[in-house]
Length: 334
Image 1: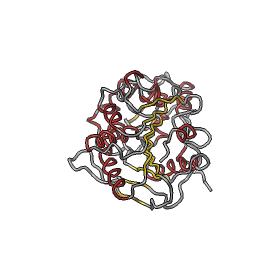
Image 2 (image 1 turned 45 degrees about the vertical axis):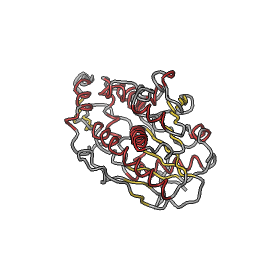
Image 3 (image 1 turned 60 degrees about the horizontal axis):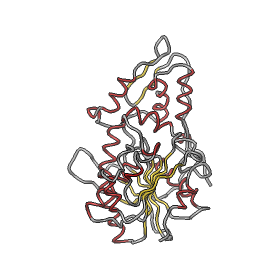
Image 4 (image 1 turned 120 degrees about the horizontal axis):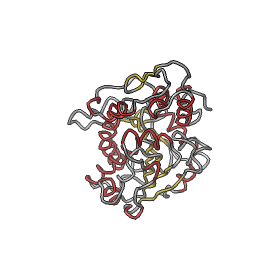
């Protein structure tokens, strides 16, 4: 049985005189109702000088600010906000839902690698385990909710035990990317340990900024000679550059050395990637367009266009609305 948790949804911005507290500070509606703060906002989002501490704003505030970020006011702000809104359904993980967690255990500002621990039991019977790596701005309960939604959607298609990979992504954008980079080697270490101790195959799903964690993990596995540590890798709405998976890049070389398939599920109608990611990182996301040059893709890599089935950035893994059937079809038998 599932229950509704309000934090999984995003509300529309209000109309009138208002000030939005966003991750980058304040965006205030001018007398003309027009926002012309794009340059300042871009600087704050991409400036590594702002990489200290967590941000207190929620995804609701972040999306409410989008009307200003795009440079619209009034009804335009409402339109932009509604286009960027969404949820993954009313799924709440039960108590004890398992997670491999690094929260409070990884610090990008030090030379220490950090470690992952299992919170909950991974002993559920099954041919393999699916590890769901969440994206940006996600706290631990929501990370488990998302993994539980994935498990619920797969139950009628291809039942698999599912666990969350829960990492400290609930901070500003640049610090979150640094945290994703630092989590990649830690995930790789855990996968190698899992292969040595449990031995069941692992399917890895990287959603949004979680794709960055996963690709950094593949790079670390390649360097460690652990190309067989994952049975498959699936990227859902990946928030990484569309040219970063080419064969002649570090990620592309890591994929080439992997003994398992890598599938990128992309959606041209993903407004979060098409608008906010492109504005903040000044490039297209592989989760919106697929790889920049299909002819340059590494061996084992496949793009799958899910624009016709995924309605927004939050629905890739939503049962009945996302692309879990396509994902399940591409999981290799073990």
